[in-house]
Image (cartoon, rainbow, N blue to C red; front, side):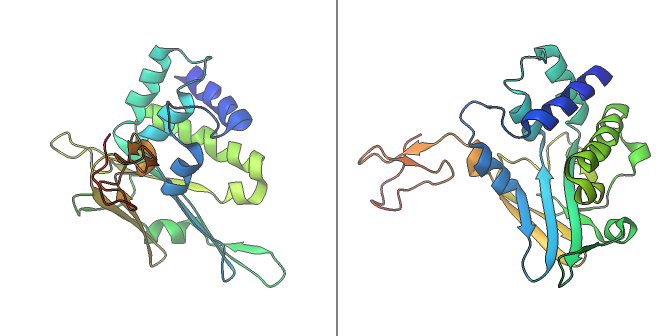
Amino acid sequence: MRSIILTLAIILTCSFLYAQYENVDQDEFVSETQHLDTDNSNMKMVWWIPIEFWKVIMSQEESLSDAQVVELVDALSPYVIFGVIHGEMSNYGAIRYTPQDEIKSSIRFVDANGMTQLPIPEENLNTETQILLNVFEPLLKNMIGEMGENFRFYVFKDINGRGVRVADPLAEGTLTLTMMGEDYKWETPLSSLLPPRKCPVDNAPMNGSWNYCPIHGDKLSK
């Protein structure tokens, strides 16, 4: 597992978010999973990182074998991970980052079943996930400096007592992360992960989450 983590660190450093995953539009996928607020002197970002993210970035990485990919995905699959940054910019452009203890105490995750979760303490995570997070946090600091130093990951359960995912980007539902009194929401399924549909009238490609053509009103075909 350590060799896989180190390989992933190299991948993220050299080709972050540029791997191919079948027909997934990388920019759309990242846009759908991130909430970024840099207006009104804010520096706030909440990034939902589902297990599908790791499948995306590893899908065409030849240095990883199928067995290694399966091993990493299996290790991370019990969890849903959020990366966050929170701060305020001064009139001179300097950023005052909110202390991590203050952020952590404010974070709540409401899953697709409407259940509220608190972050899982790091010592309660499986060993592979602990190693992964311990590698990425200093890596981000080296990549983007002070902003990376103030970027933190928070982990929650993605599998309920019945063995069903509670943060599935391909299932219908709503996810909410509350941080510092503000709610950040995601409506699923994520259109970037769905196969595109076609208008039966002119065969124009349409968003995979749409059921009807917004132009002609006809039901879309898969």
